[in-house]
Length: 69
Length: 258
Image 1 (cartoon, chains in turn green, red):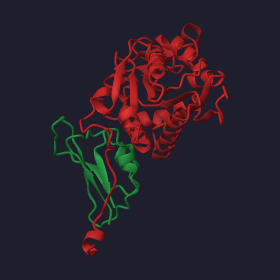
Image 2: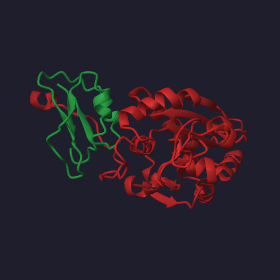
Image 3: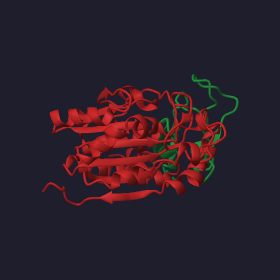
Image 4: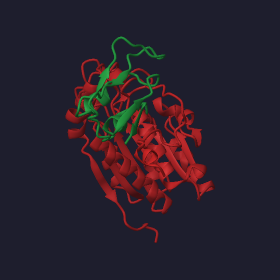
């Protein structure tokens, strides 16, 4: 089963990973603020759908996403 | 090995080893982060971290030394290619690359770039083209698209006053000294993969002493374009790529001095 780990304190909430996740498993967590003052992205994968395609991590400009497979 | 250990998910993608574990100062959605990551991955792939020297130009990429774990020199405005020439001649066994923006390379540093390319210096030039002067506040650059509004072209760039955007990659591809010229983008995962391949190819050709290698990377500057990251990436696709076509413009198979 694949999953991603998000370093929330590096995330700037730009939304590029959300745009590139074809399964829509990433969302902006509106009620959370990180040390930089942004709403970070959260990984929501209740049914284990993530395939580990790495698109989110490839497009993340801040290297905040790690992919495990 | 127990079954449990075998089934445990392994890390398949993470921060490259050469990229220091510090946060970038870039704005949200800025593609400089992607390019830094690609450069670090290329350095890791060839295992040349101990003998790579970077030369950072002026602009948002100036803090290269903070992020990539290699030796980095700072070049004054536009002179990165001239400085890299010196470094590569003194250290012919090292990998030397410059990291420049469009305000740096295509405006004030155009002479140094063209002559370094014409001499076929063994350096790699990474040219991050985001069509504005990013760090100084979004002024018009030589690569600003026609009709684009910037702080110094508030009514949009017009040909009659400011000329057409310069296509650096095409211009350098005509010179005999260049061995590899490519234009890539980092707006979609597919383009990012192609960009990675092009950067690795450029490093490889430099290691093989083929001549001057140049990679132009189309990048988004959401802050100075006045849009969010997702819209900025869409603009790269819809406005920049039609004017600055992607692809490998020149690839030499033999060094021309042989």
